[in-house]
Amino acid sequence: MSRYLDPAWQIAMRVRFDFNNLMAENIGEEHGFSMAELERHAHLAQAALAAVQAQRRAGGLRWMELPYQEVDALLALAAEIRARFKNFVVLGIGGSALGTIALQDELLHPFHNQLPAAQRGSPALYVLDNIDPDWLSGLLDVLDPTETCFNIVTKSGDTAETMAQLLWARRLLIDRLGAARYAEHIVATTDAVTGSLRPLVNGERFRSCRVPDGVGGRFSVLSPVGLLPAAVTDMDVPALLAGAAYADRLSQTPFLWQNAGLMFALTQYLAYRRGKPMSVMMPYAQGLRTVADWYAQLWAESLGKALDRQGQVVNVGPTPIKTLGATDQHSQVQLFVEGPHDKIFTFIFADKFGHQVEIPAWQSGQDAVDYLGGHTFNELLAAEAAGTALALAAAGRPNAAFHVPEINAFTAGQLFYLLEVATAVSGEFYNINAFDQPGVEGGKVRAFALMGRPGYEAKRAEIEAAREKRDARYEI
Ligand code: PA5
Image (cartoon, rainbow, N blue to C red):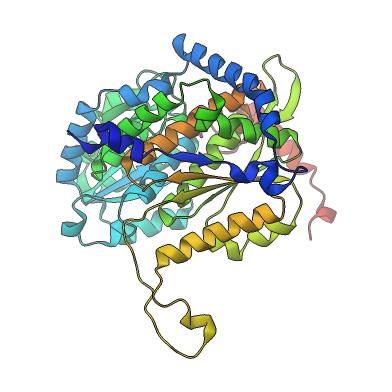
């Protein structure tokens, strides 16, 4: 039996949520919660969870079923790609890239791409989630397109950045391989039916994966969007899904005191209502750094909304802030400890690392040096993390922590799923639609107009009229 199916191992790998430092007894009554206050709001949490579960039962939240998907075909495709290509380049943006970047940092060797190919055992993985021309050109200095598979990831097939990247990759490949062979180097991950990429997949005979209906970008890490790059680079996809399924099971309970995701969502919401709109996410592991990036998008795009479900203007939403321990102790922690009381903090601690690295001893005669020797970097990082949490608590700053027993595919799947459910539940608290992103459209539409997309002529005229009104006095 694979270890991730062993119930005892699963329990040992459970992601825990420690919220001691949100409580009044540890940070004071002004900024901490009392037990009574949380109890008073338990019904609100239960109602929100019940609403999410009802939507799921009605077939509305298909991302919640991703832990149970069939992946044989995806694994077979990945094995083929792994055997044939030296490099796998993901071209996508937002929810089509951030989950893959987080998986890459969590589950691959930290210097995967720099390892010799034989030691790496799978293609180098590059995720290009931007369109900076220097970045694109730079990639060509480190890889040969003829040894590369390009994975075009766009649910909608409508995203200008990604479609431009497709054109770029296509031209590179045609120039090197010819029009008859270029398509062998492209795999598209897109909607099964709709969008502009699907007809190109059919016409050009690109291989493809489907983003299931009802799975939006930021909830798609456990769909082929994240799973294909994961499988190509030999991550343990079944363990990842088993971790998500485990989180699904744990998140079913309506008992606030037993449900980590529910308690996280409720305390975040109550903090927001108490004048703490800033939600800081601070992992203390390099491998979890970009989980904070993924969370920032999930939280911001899902919960930052102008209108509530009744169409009233509410302009709500917490502001996620992504940081990294210990690095940002020397950057933002000064503000966190002494600045405005407008933040709630969530650490992600890895209880165990893959390596234990000793700090060698040296009796140099310098106190600032000598006490470190004989300890480990593991101990030092844990001490820095505990020190920051305690310093925040002493300053009356509410802070909680997710404890990841170790960073592996099972705990990665758990954490993604837990935070996704927490986001859906939070949508209920705020009474907004957590699954749309109308605010992103404004910028997109204007970019379409400026780039001459048919159908956007009126918008272009509007932009040009606005540009003519620009006043030179306001530019220095
Ligand atoms: O979460 C979302 O829906 C967005 O961030 C999208 O992922 C992003 O806009 C890219 O969209 P698409 O996958 O359609 O190219």
